Figure 1 (cartoon, rainbow, N blue to C red):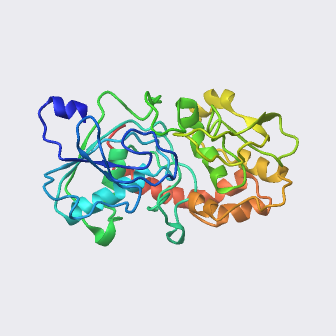
Figure 2 (cartoon, rainbow, N blue to C red; figure 1 turned 120 degrees about the vertical axis):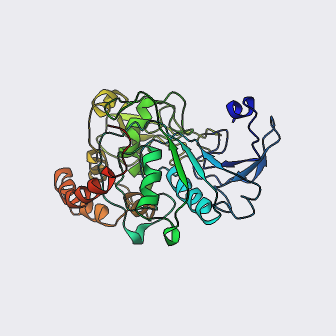
Length: 329
């Protein structure tokens, strides 16, 4: 925004996704419309009473610019914001310009494909958890495969990233959300976010969110931490004030950075070591996984290799679809 203003571009309003325009709101915290204190521009919340711009929101708008750093994971809600903004632009005949950015997980795909009956704001489209596309490539997929409501076809233009290809592992230089503070959290996020759908903490309320996991009733685990309230990051973290036992995975960064695989061994290990009274999984887990099969297979004692083998036919089909929309080698 600051750059456009210095070039004399007439910005008429700002649309804010989850975490807000300044990226300083807790996960899941609903946002109200606001005014930017510096520019006095209106900020329209797309993570509160609505997720999609209305016709009134788009009045007097000639073009929408989408410039948000994604992390390449299906349940990261900036993808859903892109979906709804594309729909709104198509329905109101307003061009959308996507400023593309590198995806730290761009070189591989993995995980189950989202099923229709599990759709939610943490997964709107039939893609795997790690879909291996930049935000610009993903926008092209949504339009080309007619995943938008009524198959609407917005006028989309993607500005590609210069001097980047899929083999260049990208370290995000500014945190995309409060609980992804650095590249370690970003790389571990696809695997540890599963814990958000369980009783287990994924490290919210610590200085290493999405780099550790634990629960008071996990037995025989080598690491402990106590989640505390951190306004602007985790106001009410899971298991707040309780000693959680689990694993610190910070030192796994190098192996994860160079891998091409989603890790569910940690999830299976936690399930097998959990001795609490409450159910391990909650209803949110199916939304994150995108199906009910993963939970059932873990409960039945399936190994990671057995579970992943079942994903392969659908991943192969998705790979063929994905290939049509890739911009980078």
